[in-house]
Image (cartoon, rainbow, N blue to C red; front, side, top):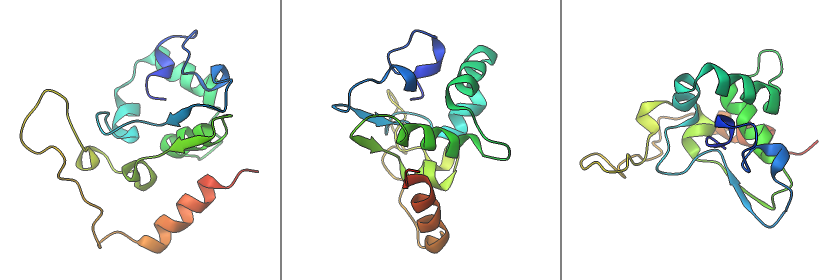
Length: 127
């Protein structure tokens, strides 16, 4: 979905996903985490995001994008753990065309797994 908001005619906009036979994801292992991404997008992308996703008052933008992905007709939705957790650069898995610290991120025991479980459940249940 991070690629959806650059163009109002994008096939990736939530309203243009019209087949359940697809996979929707906020981002892949090669993308920035959604909190990083949201802070990097242009004013016009932000406006299209708000128009498409309709964040509710007080809702953080990452949860809004996850909720929007979950509300599409897609049979399969994949959300990186870093997005559920709302982490930024430290949650990046891979940076294409670079060497070094790629593929090193791990879900550590320091995270509040009960809170994380509740967030995943809240965002996964369709109303």
